[in-house]
Image (cartoon, rainbow, N blue to C red):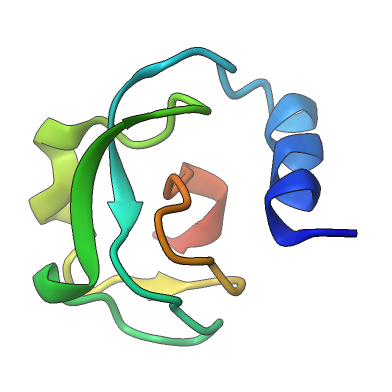
Length: 81
């Protein structure tokens, strides 16, 4: 099963709105356990509606709880709070 399909299934279970919007995305493949830097993140019109683009700076320094593919939306459950 592809990574984006797996994340879509989890997003639906977690109640993440599956709509298009301006969101924070991974600019590169980010492995689980990686501390996020601004250089790893970008903004794109994408689905699912993950972390809003305006909140991108709040992600810096947080750790990914799972692997994220390039240009994949970063969702709240993927980031260690």
